[in-house]
Image 1 (cartoon, rainbow, N blue to C red):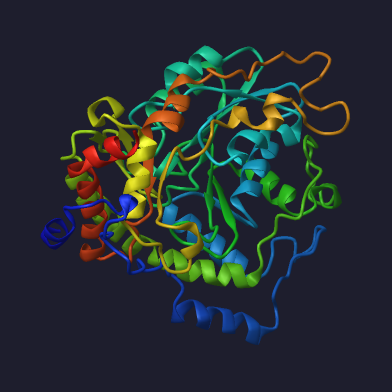
Image 2 (image 1 turned 180 degrees about the horizontal axis):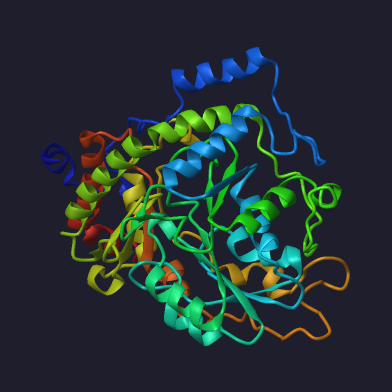
Length: 445
């Protein structure tokens, strides 16, 4: 990093100076020869899928899917793993399996990928937003408790940025009020809470295998549970439940209108190889994040991420908070200056440098909630005759709004293929901007 400091402590790049780095950062490439061999194995077999949407020996998929599910369950120490075509489908299937229905309420986070909040709508349930924690960005247990009513049936707890939710407090609340916990661990594979894997902390957990996750199959997801009945219902929902329930001798027909959420044999074969790499990929990612955080924390206006006691973090992205009072300028202006000092990442060149602020606008600000436009002309389920009217006004979750509009920023230049030299360039960009912050104040006048 000393190389960066000596050579760049001058005019900021955003003002026309020389940037800290112009060379592209390395791509996050987890696909190798192992995956290529696995794909060829499937192609040579001629079996790209073996699903049939009826109660048949092909109901559970082909040999790669079934092997992948067993290996995933063994790795994460759960009884059942159900492979699906996406984590979005996984959340939807999970809510269906536990019996969520019209008029029910599900407590959700305002700060995540949108499906974490919209999934209840598919079953006619109403999303109710609780606020997030200031230090960890996951759902705040105290805010959850205030939102519980006699209509509340479940909580979707998101392990945001790779940090497991407050399982002790939220699970205790759920037990007290007879609620179910669906854990969205899409960003946290391999993270742990008191020795137990993220994704296995609630009643049902979901993982993502989307292309920008820790490990991936292009698209895909996995649902896990220790409950035999829910596992059966998950598999039914995945594969045209309505066509199989009679022969499957399913008694509870609630939500037994299924989908095609099936994973292909090629995806499963890739997933089997990717799973073998998770531990090593995660170890390097954590090491990079700890190194970068320890140095950025020396900058007075930057607040390094906190890790919950007894928790290991998976670092989907590396999130920080910004103190505008200490900086004397806005977060947005500071981060734009940092971005100007850095280069894009290979394969993602069109995104610019992978340093951003705000993450997502609080989800209740989306049109679907602001206008309460659901399904059909009647806007189901928002206008259910006996439904409770839920407000989605601005100010609903003040911490989430403050994080989005004022404080939170994050970067993605910390993955497993980032070298120490690469990390030093990231650190050097932040230090350069802070050391020359007066240029931003002057430039903005």
